[in-house]
Structures are given as structure tokens and as C-alpha cells.
Image (cartoon, rainbow, N blue to C red):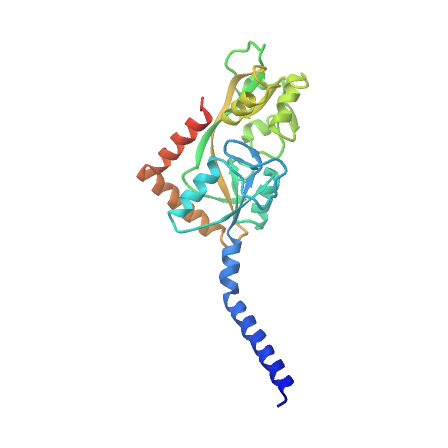
Length: 267
């Protein structure tokens, strides 16, 4: 055999061995790479892009992100978390492109579309906000009938609100856009979750002192909507449930909540 032919043979053998090694490791890598969750990009302090316009492959920041990582870590599980708009987040989970999406509420409309863990990650009030000069007493859902009410497109809201034809509904692309609609008197009231709303109001000069909480729609639990179509979705939901339960029992969940509330000046 010539020296050139021998060299080429050794090179081909080396390439073949490398390819076989990669194939052997492929399923492990594929399984690890498939453990991807999606978090919404515009709902601080629970989940938001670290910087506006940031790369979607960068994880969001917020309480939900910290809690999810901590709960899964108790089960020896690590996941990649990407940042996307919420409506796309839910679509990715529904179609199995990611293993789950957060932060979602369970409604009659989505109850059967996802795998839901127990217990919920946390509870958050869905509030009615009006302009600062609104003198309405504490309002409820029925008080919105006949009113112009705006909500954020793509978010999950109680079916009782979404299906009530007596409420004139309008949608906006973000919570900030909702607030501007209200201040411009295009609508009478808007629906916002209490903690994210106050954080945005307090941190935005154009909103500070201009809005008032006027009532309550519901106190809602928030979940990771795990995918029924993803091969790891159901298993990951079970592991997350076990992790959350363990954290609630050993006190680490409450410590995380207390630290979070101090950080955001919870009210």
C-alpha cells in the first residue's frame, strides 16, 4: 500500500470513528437539548427579557425563572429557557416546539391543551385599573358590563370575562399600551395583574400617579403550561410538581417568595 493511500485510509477511519462516537452520543445530546422552556418577554417582575430587543436565546429574568430552576434542580433537572412573546410562547408549547411555557393561567379554553402541574407556582391578582380621577367604589366583573375594557392580546384571562358579550372589549399589544389607551380615554378600564402593574406604574414617569386600582376580577394561580405534544412534557410536569412540593415543605419556597417581595416592594 502506498504511503498516500495509507494516510487517506487512516484519515477516513478517523472520520468514521468520530462519526460513530457522535451517533452514539446523539440521543443523549438530543434529549438534553430538547429540555427547553419558553418564558414571556414582557411581564416583570415574573418573566421579562433582560434587555429590550435581547436575543431570544437568552433566558428571561424574574421570579418565575428563579423558581422554575430551583424546583427542577431539586429533581436533578436542568433546562434551557428562551425568551419569546407570550402568545408565541403558548403556541410553541401547544405544538411541542418547547417542553412548556410560563406564566399561564388555567381557563376553560386552554384546560385540555396542556399538561398542568400541581401546585401552582404562585397566585397573582387580576385587577381593574381606571384613571386616577375615577371615584368608583370597589368594582367586580359585573360592574364592567356596558363599559369599554381593554386587555393584553394573547394573555390568558378568565373565561367569564372573555365570553361576556355585555362587556365591550378591546385589546392591546402590551400592558404599557393598555395604560396609554386608558390615559388617552380610548377605554374606561383596563385589566392588569396587580404586582406587574404597580411595578410598571412606579417605574414609568408617564404612568406614575395617573392610574388607580378600582377593583378585582379574580385571584389567579399561574403555571408552566407543559406540552402534550413534546416527548418530555408530561415527565417534566411531574418532576416540576415534585420539586415545587418539596420546596413548599422544606421552606425554601417561602424564602424565595419573601426575598422576591422585598426586592419588588410588594404591595
